[in-house]
Image (tube, rainbow, N blue to C red):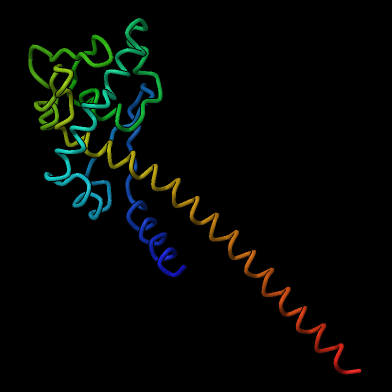
Length: 187
């Protein structure tokens, strides 16, 4: 029980920091790795672990599903609530100034990216690359992980409260039983 409480506290600590920044006029947020807890940065998006995570993102075709859903809807995807991974891995950062042709194909301006952000140069229209090597994609994965761990945290706290209430009722029942048996012995 104590280990469970300590683990719940740990989850709270590592997920307490990190939030997306709303992009004006669109239905998604953009994320930065530096906005997240250092433990998450070190252990989740380190170079060693990122290779495996990136491979999973490509294999699950998370961006292909976005492209499939919005193929016939023009640029409607820009106004939809994209998941942190979709908004960070399937499109270049808004600051790059690229022009969307569909959900996963973006045209670079003839003058080059509007920002010196390294993610602008990391972007590729190749379906197996997209922005999977971008810092923003790593941040999107952290945001997704944070979201999932927060749900887990809420579940743990709820279970803890339920167990605490049951424990309190049990203690009260034992005390009442003890008091009744004590009062029956003394006339």
